[in-house]
Length: 350
Picture 1 (cartoon, helix red, strand yellow):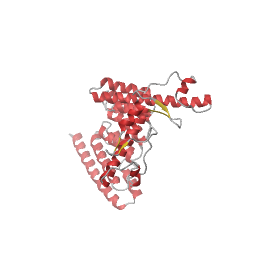
Picture 2 (cartoon, helix red, strand yellow):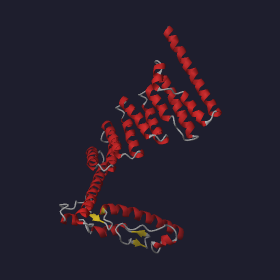
Picture 3 (cartoon, helix red, strand yellow):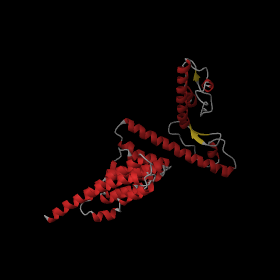
Picture 4 (tube, helix red, strand yellow):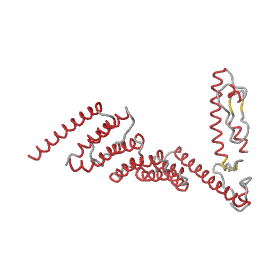
């Protein structure tokens, strides 16, 4: 009975103290300088180790208070100075109190990395959370995302996305992000292996098509990377740039030119850069779509189609006409007011 009374008294004391802290913080917000305010904020957040030993069996209660204070802290600075120097500390205190509070740890990881501008601190927090919650794949996914989107470390991003996929499964998003990240890291073999896993487990035709398309485009990038390396080897061996890709075969640098997965062919451009007809078609398709949109805008404004594409420049609907990736004139049909992409593609496929 005495122990129960003691716990009740302690709970009341904590609540009163929390109210006092909140009231004091409001007073500080109005009375002290910005620097003193930041120092004052930290007075209420001693280390998590200290709190853990001081609050006995009230971890969850205090963790919820710290969680509310973290949200308040973020909201205050989001509305004022966008400066969050103690954000990582607050969420680390929260982790010490409740390692299983996964939603808070994930939220903290986002805030610390993006708003707080401290992605490495966010990763350290999330790594601790993963050790305590290994089955929660979202934590590992978040580490992958920070590496991929903020640090541009595609290898690390792919690694953590792949870890997440072990729990999420081959039909989830983690494995696809892992494959995409490894592709950007130019780890083509691993990227293709992951997409093949997606292909094997695909439950819809659309997902199968997505996986097949990704595998083929990775193969194109891998082939181009090899061929670009051979350009340098050719120059070192012969002393000048190759005229065409078949020169690699002639000089015994390659047995044969790789087969392009979409049935196109690889090309050596005038600047000695290697590309493929598939990539050129993709680029052309985007340009044609843009030009047709501007032609539509011209027609709406002028009540007629432009006589030629140069009219779009003269009437300031575009700054310039993008160069055709194939180095030829666009097939513009004035009667329809369209640049005809199929005619250009057919011309190069035949």
